[in-house]
Amino acid sequence: MKQILSRFNPWWEPGYSFEELIPREKWTTNIYNQIDLPIISFLTGIRRIGKTSLMKLTIRHLINQNSIDSDKILYCSVDDYLLAQSNLPEIVDEFRKIHGHRFEEKLYLFFDEITYLPEYEIQLKNLIDNQNVKIFASSSSASLLASKKPYLTGRQRIVEILPLDYHEYLLFKNLQVSPSDEHLHEVYFKEFLLSGGIPEYVKSGDFQYLKNLVDDIIYKDVAAIHGIKDIQLLIDFFMLAMERAGKQMSLNKMATILSVSVDTARRFLELFQSTFLIYTMSRFGTTNERILAPKKLFAADTGFRSIFVGEKDFGALFENYVFLRIKHQQPQYLYTDQTEIDFIFKNLKILAEAKYHDQGLSAKQQKLFDQFPDYSKFIITSENDIQTLLSALNSQP
Image (cartoon, rainbow, N blue to C red; front, side, top):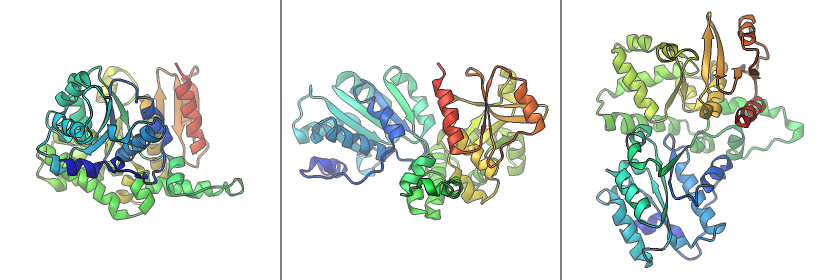
């Protein structure tokens, strides 16, 4: 095991220089603020969204900014087959032996893809309760994490990592726009909506990378874990979902198209949601309406919709992107008399409509807007408008 852990932790060697990592300050600020908290900090999100890179950024921060000795930091990818027969206490004990750490010394532990380990929740609980450790862990499965939540109540904080936003996209593409070239933002933003914000795909532009990512999730995180043998049916469901991204979704219609029961379609939806490939948003209204009315469906990344559906309906792509930026505020959509407003935040009294390259509301939408006189109202047509909406959302108590 010593050889395996040494391979995972090259900073243990004298003179190690960290690889160049592109900062993602919107996430690292939150993560760094948790360093001194006696809790387990979970990073969640779709596969290859950058959770491992954020862990490495945190490790670099601990060493360079917090002056933590590098040999007090352990990182390991728990899904590595070489660790399949090991548990967390054994791994940590071996770590202590390698460096001669006393039991009372503070250690910083990073466990990647922790949910692949059987009974990980009990092992984490024992570590955080009985040892002087700070733990960071990651998971690409919302359902596996949620199913073990009772064991870790009061001992965890979850940060869901989302795809790159437009400003991060420019950073990862090494694109800079001077004041005299502001017109290029329109070109770059359209390219961004099509490619999405999966970090490695943004850097490489390799179409096959994104397709392989979806295949990995379907085969490994959905079919294998949940015992589904008809892989093609899962793929068909996902492609159908991508065609409906940014729109209301009828499970009855999807079930009919796929020749499956509504219960099967509902199960597939839940499984895709659990792997962060799909998000849904409920309709604003009574509890009955919220439960029974069709939900709006969104892709985890606009690039997924593009590669499976093609370059069409930029309005739906833009709305999908806006949703990803504001989903943490739990928006709903407003629908009445066959007229829809994209986002409503009841508790914050805010209405917002996404209009890609379109400044105006329809007459029916304007009438619906006017039915909420005490609400703040936003028409979102650009990245700057999203920032304005976010400022309004985040300024509310």
